[in-house]
Amino acid sequence: MDKKLLQSYKVRLYIALTSLALILGLIGHCVTADTAKAILLNLASGCLYVIVIESLIDVLLKKNNARQNERNIARQNEKISVVLKHDSGEIKIPGKIRREDFSRQEVLGRIGMIPMKEKGQRFTIKYPNMTSFLEEVNRISESKGNGTLYIECSKEDLEQFDLTENETKR
Image (cartoon, rainbow, N blue to C red):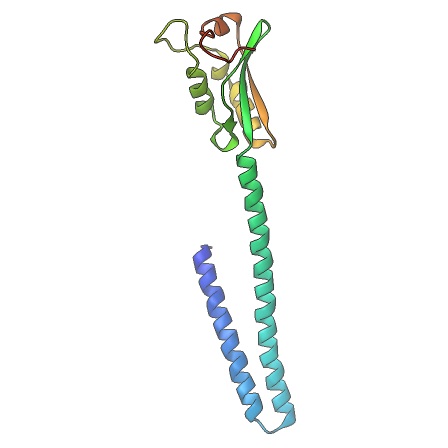
C-alpha cells in the first residue's frame, strides 16, 4: 500500500476516533443516569487510548526505520578497493569505490583509467569476462565492511599498463 494513502487513512481514523470520543464525552456529561454516563465516558476514554497506543506504535516504527536507513547509508558508504593481481606483482587501482557505486562497469571503468603503454589502446584482461568475476562482484557488493576485489591477471595483462606515470604499483 502506498505510504501517502496509508497516512491519509491514519489521519482519517484519528479524526474519527477523536470526534467519537468528544461526542461520547459530551453525551456522557449530558446523560443523567449514572450507568449510561459511565458507559459513554468509558467508551470515550477507550477511543482516546486507541489513539495514544496507535501513536506510540507509529513513533516506534518510524524510529526503527530511521535506524535502519542510517545503517543502510553507512553500508553504502563503505569503500571497496580493486587490485589487479599476479604472482609477479599487483596494481592497486587508485581511489576506492563506494559500495553503492560498486559494479562491474565501475570496476572496468577504473581499470580503463590506468595509462596504457600503447596510447589509445583498450586494456584486455580475461577474468572480467568470466562468471566467477561477476559472482565475486556480487558477493562483495552484498557483503558488509570495507572490501577488496582481486582481479587475477596474467603477467602480460599487467605489462600492458604504463606504470611509470601512475602511483598504482606496489
